[in-house]
Image (cartoon, rainbow, N blue to C red):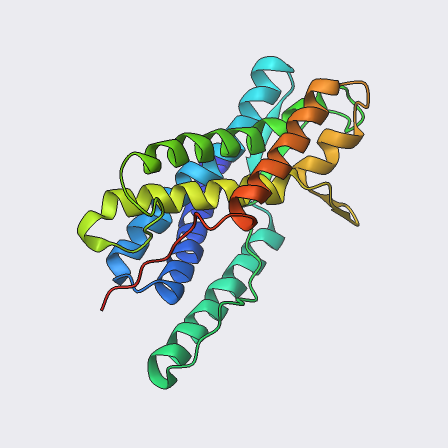
Length: 230
């Protein structure tokens, strides 16, 4: 029961964050931003955590549980507050910025195993790999539907816009999570994927491929286009 409550609360909090970001940056009605925020949260974030858990329990045969920590709740509520302030400033003064100083977290899956266990690197990388595959599939679909392929705020074709947003956030989360970063006791999935089992060549290559291709899609091409409408 505790895990179900954690999942529901995490989903609501992250939906508010994503909806706030979209409503602030893109000329999108609030109701559309809330729908998009919920879809992005479920597809890109909560299923990401589900893959961690399923791989740990079904493949590595370890006990795993999704936990919403006090830290995750605190930073996410602070992010929602900051977004509300930015939205009000933009509404009443016209001033806005694309640099949004927020940090949000849905919590995470805690696995009952030693981090030195050789299965831990696979548990870590399977979720960013899921995000990466979703990004590729949605990207391929978008190229068949519209030109440019990433129209993020065309309310007349909200389904395609929503798929574009899912693709964008999927690549973004894949890239960020696959980076090998460790600060104190907090580390990304990519850190564990590259450091736990140094003999696991397949996991190392998957991590590197995710980082470089996601980076190329996000930063080295002009594919992403935000099309503004009066």
